[in-house]
Image 1: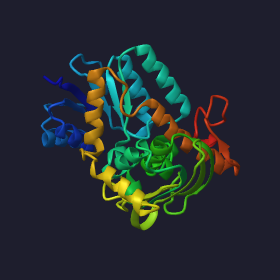
Image 2 (image 1 turned 90 degrees about the horizontal axis):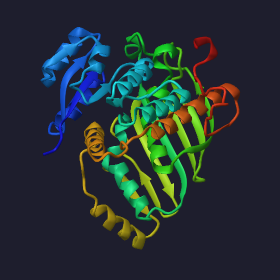
Image 3 (image 1 turned 60 degrees about the vertical axis):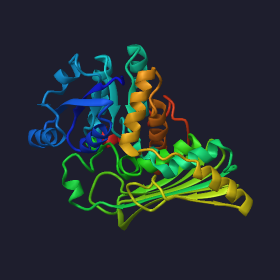
Length: 359
């Protein structure tokens, strides 16, 4: 019989998408309690998803012996302490993006998890599991793409004044960053997922769309560790919202759909350089086994990893790659110079990428 893991959720915003993923995996997870400071919203989610218990006390919930997993869906500034308390209480942890507010915190959490000797922490990067992106990963594994040349990623969304009416948004102290951190982070994780870590970043970033503290428009040029190049653009001032990923390899060009929030899903296009290679690619794609995607698939894979005693499908190292990209971009924007990676303890933004006036 499959082990059903017991989950406590903290937060009542993005948590609704997590709850849908857990409900789809109802044979693997049982969400027995939800914690939120917004009691009305929390109780409504409990009613909607059949969660038997509501609480406003996160610390007591974390220490309970009848929970296996703490799922953290709170604003970014609270993530590190909640993760620390949950890991030290012996719980496995799922945590929304952006994971933490510095590379130093990612490294410290790695030490905390290692000392705990058992609990696992999985950052959320659910966009990885769209069928389009998974097909690309399959073709790379089969050696059908050839050498990587160039990747272009566009995250062009719209966020108006109503979005920033939520008190913690648009502020360095609580949101920890702007569109690079909170919006384009998924598409940029897909870059690292395909090509590995970045080696050098040059970036421009500015605030053009709304009167907020953090950036809402940015352009980045990147050299990857595998030798390929990437060009990334992000704005929250696009009245027509799109996300687009385009990968140029020596033997294949791959392009995503334009849907802004599900760009990892089919139908992606895969165009080879000649008919013979196109046939090989098409035959491989025909063999692809479609699975669930998004939170549903990431949670399923997390359950599998815990039952088998393996590392989570998304690990702290993945979050580090993602936050290194953000850190390097902010450093480049402020210095006007390219920034080399990795970001190590002697880097000026290792402990915080926040502007000095907000630390």
